[in-house]
Structures are given as structure tokens and as C-alpha cells.
Length: 151
Image (tube, rainbow, N blue to C red):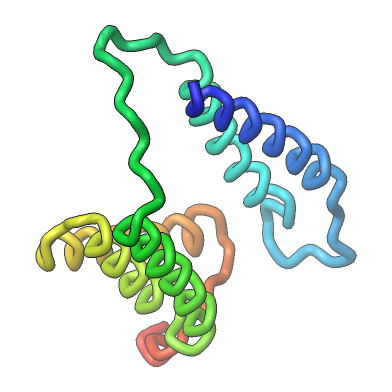
């Protein structure tokens, strides 16, 4: 039941943010798709996941009790927030690809992936997202320390 309440409130927040993002117009065009395409695309994906969570069929398995907010869970939440802050801090300096690899590896390790899984997964995610944004959507991302490799 809690997940459906979360999904409903998430859907409501996505709707409000989509209305706000739809009216956004930048004084200059620096991207071919415009400045509102990225937030609208993200909101569409989040809203789709919220709709699935809201209307998914109830399983016949007995409801599992949610874990309490113990020391282990609090530690994971704190490390996740620290990883996000570190990602924001080094994004411009290191560039998109290295900082995204480090963030993805940290998050994968935090949730139990092996070193090999997190390294390969982090590299594939970072390079794939860079190629999608830079070549697919023509959104420039900072290269940071990899700028010497460009052209």
C-alpha cells in the first residue's frame, strides 16, 4: 500500500514539474532540442514508472514488512547522499565520463555488486550516456580531464 501512495504522490509531483517545465523558454538556444526537452523526458520516464507502480497487480505473496531505519539503512542513505554530493563537486573538473564512472561504481558497490560488475557497468553506463547526449541529443557535456582526447 505504501508503494502506491508513493507512486501517486510521485505522479502528482511529475505533473506539476512538467507544467512548470513546459512553459520554460531560454533567451537563447544553445541546444537543438531546446532547454525543456531534457527535464520533460526525465519526467516522462519517472511518470511512466510511477504509473506502473500505481497500477501493477498485487502479488499473491504475503506482504513483506519494510525494513526499519536502523544503522545499516541510515549508513547506506548517508553514503548515497555523499556520493551524489561528490558527483556534483567533481562533475566539471573531472568531466562527465570519469565522474559518472566513479558515481556508478560507488552506487553499485553500495548495493552489493562485485568490483568487476560495478567497474564494467559504470564504464558502460557513463560512455553510453555520453554518446547518447553528445551525439544523439547534441547536448554538450564537460569532458574535463578527457578534453585532450577530443578531435
